[in-house]
Amino acid sequence: MRHLSKEKIRLAKLSSPARKWTRYPKKAFYGFVGPWVVGFVLLTAAPMVYGLLVSFTNFDGSSPKWKWVGFKNYLELFNDGDAWTALLRTLAFTAIVVPLSVGGSLFLASLINRRLRAVGLWRTIFFLPSVVPVVAMAIMWKLVFNRDSGILNAALGVVGIPPITWLGDSTALYALSILMLWGVGGGMIIMLAALQGVPVELEEAAKVDGAKPWTIFRHVTLPMISPVVFFAVITGVIGSLQILVQPLLLTNASGISGAGAVPESNRLYMVQVYQEFFLSNRFGYGSAMLWVFFLIVLALTMVLLRSSRSFVYYEVDADAENEGAKR
Amino acid sequence: MTVIQSPNTRERGVATTPDAPRRRKTKQREAKTYVVILALSVFFLGPFIWLVIAAFKRPEEWASVPMTVFPQHAEWDNFVAALTSVNFFGYAANSLFLATVTSVLTTLSSAAVGFGFARLKAPGKKALFLVLMATMMIPQILTLLPTYVLFSQVGLINTYWPWVLWGLAASPYLVFLFRQFFAAIPRELEDAAIIDGAGWIRMFFTIFLPLSRPVVITSFLLSFTAAWSDYIAPALFLNLDRTTLAVAITAFYQDPVGNVIPTVQAAGAILYTLPVLLIFFFCQKYFIRSALGSGVKG
Image (cartoon, rainbow over all chains, first blue to last red; front, side, top):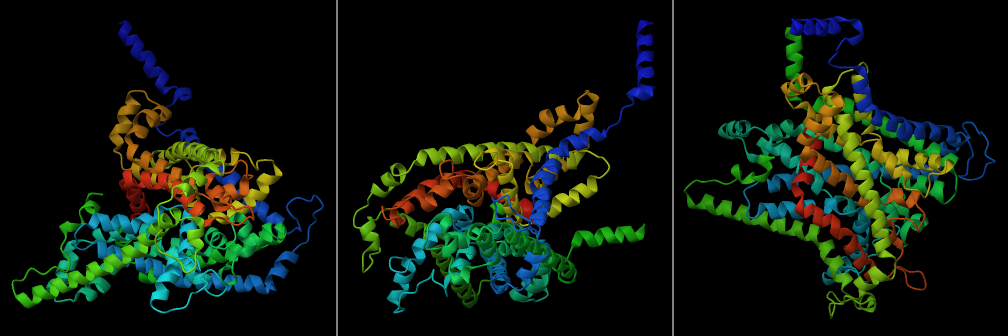
């Protein structure tokens, strides 16, 4: 009897609206996701809005005597030849480096994907540079590119090519590109996984039909891995547009004071922004440059995402759409 | 994961026909492949080797004309100078402290947020997830400079607080890795825990977090090496006396005139990079796993 009454009490409690149990209390979700939401607001949204406000002022970073200047910074930026040059240079740099690094990582991956002796060793060697800290990377390549003591000019000298001032005004962008391509190993691993995800039967079938290796790669393998290639292109474009640290460090000067010593051909857009901020103390103008750049990057990303429909093959999405149509 | 460790299981370009000319052709092609691989290895390993060579040269030897490729004696003086001419261990301690704090906090917060997105429901979840994915596309440097300006107004410059905040705020990329992992765990486990009376917080700490050990390790290693390698944040946010090793080795190894001594800097760069390389060699599979998580499902 006592047992039964206890049961009754429990049931009564359950049905009372105050103690209604739900599997997914809202508080739980917001509690778990909260840290990121707060972080996003404080560390991403707030700085960006603040940057937008600063871009309408002539703030110099310290003086309290700043004032609103309206769109003056933006108008100046529109007529700023150096900024335009830097922007075009950055776009050109991206247009060269991204295809080379995506293509390079795909090439390395297909090389590693063959039957080879010591394949693990080669994979590690190719992957290794991509984990080296950027500071050490810059120091290493400065030693390689050194005009009088570097190994590159020494090797070229053997073939009879006179020493080149690699980190000088005209050739520094080549040096920077080589440094960027040195780190393609990270992309290689992603491509390797994608290649190994292609069903063997597809390639076998093409082979039986008499397709040549290149044809199989072009018409079977590449379409199958196109989502991964596209992802690499998107992240590559965003990454290379915002390059700052590598050109800052790849100078003959030392450390952060090198901002003024960046050779002409390495003055990419972010380097220009950095100089406006910390050499000229023009925080307002620098912020305007940042916001314009943010919009450009956003627009470029959108265009890439839109255009992807024509050349990226999504197997899963197609299935989902078919299912939706049936229903 | 299992596929990537054994790429040999799939035959490509290796013909097994008995006729001799074709076999010879295959042999030739194989030889070509190895030539290409060796050439690439020179490109990828060369800078490492040249760095080590430079670190063992005397400063005069490095600058000598005509240049010599190999040092006459292996000199350890550069390493001694790298450790003693500046407060190397002090900067290393700063780097270690910042990297540990951020990586522990980032891993915990990313796991929690990933758990929320994978297993819980509430209005606005889809929109929040879209915002999360979009933030991965915002170039980080674009927010870093305004953050610097903002933090300089509220007195957070030259403190370690920014790193604590960045740690607590979770990393969108790691959130995504955790979410993928947690979403794949069967619902029955959740049901069992609910029947046993566990709330979501207890379920997270006692069941899901321990299960996600491989992702936790990956996340910890990635954020640790990222913080150890970071240059721009400590260069902007910290004064030179409280800065990290990354900033110190770029600028501090100077002769009395103020020029950087390349050989000592090379030795310093080796000492600074060594921990990252050791972590990489012993935990390669975790780095590879993270690369896979980003690409395949991206």
